[in-house]
Length: 497
Image 1 (tube, helix red, strand yellow):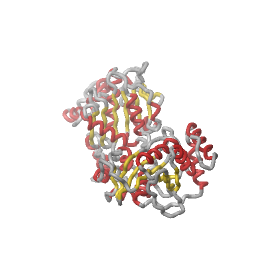
Image 2 (cartoon, helix red, strand yellow; image 1 turned 60 degrees about the vertical axis):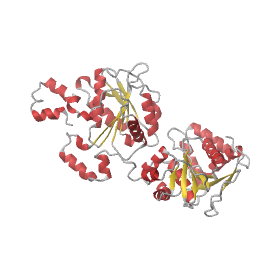
Image 3 (cartoon, helix red, strand yellow; image 1 turned 30 degrees about the vertical axis):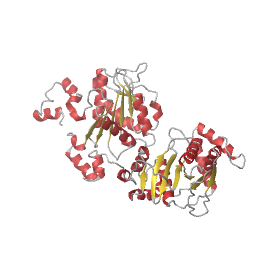
């Protein structure tokens, strides 16, 4: 719909010029005149309101105008005991300043001008907006906010996006009706956007959603629209995402399609499997910014592979070792395929320590014996194959993704986070999808397509461990110290953990 100001100017081009100077100034900051009805944040007692729209739709203007309106009207109060005001969060600190702070200041009227203050915003009546980023999700956990604004969700750092969203929305909990607003363009689904869409589908009145395109904004010049259209190419995926604001089921360069997973999904595991293994991609540290340890269990029957469980998470070494051993005992797994790039020679002794405590012997498959088939389950033994991944993640994942396309891999149940990694990770990006790597190891082993790569000399593994430990937290270094001291004990390799 057309903003009222456009209608007035069309009917009477001189209407605004005829107003006294004071009234023209007031009219310039009257959001109800300049915002389209669908661009305005609605009044009401909803919990969240979001915009998924093409670039240039006016998402930022709509939210900034609503926040200024609430501050000016007194709906949002100055900080007090148990009330910290407003939280604003963008992908990075520069984006907080460039997008949110700049917009809130620019859309505040001259007689009630907001100002940048300590990386956030402060209004003349003392109301404050505190800035945060997904890069440090723990910072806002202890806050108490009446309102939050989450912007550019599609660009949030992937490893911390869910934690940041949960932290800031949980902290938005004071006042008569604590609410959060969010906006994003689209580049395929992300973990946070997926959760928000699920909320909207489940409770559309409590979690509002507005969609729109670049063409909805009547203030954009025709030359600009034509240039943007030609830039992305009408009908292309980028055009549909950037201009039309469409959300696709997977990222453009992802190796998996959601349809491949959905079409061959199973609801129950089979009665018996020829072989069950766990793929493991261990992380060295366990801080809030660390990669997860990827652990995915899969079973084979003939030339078909079932993905049985995604056990990935941030674990200290003794915990992920316990998961491997417990799964081996409880679910008849023969053993695990584990990447040794970062952990080097420390990984198998960690597993062995946990296994021996459970009365299980660990047997390391000989890397010099060619492509030795993974042994069947043997009571009292847990087999371990170490793999050194010299190739890129894309190369390792390509073979398993082709098996999905052929309908030879079945997910037993729904593994939301794993499937999100499969359908959103694009080769060439920097984030590390460890669950996806663990999946690739397990599926490749069971399908007989695991690359036969020789590990480099042990010194390379030791250097990788040393480098990772240098960046780990003090707590992780102390834990690793216990592991290394254990390695110097008896020849049996029992660890003091």
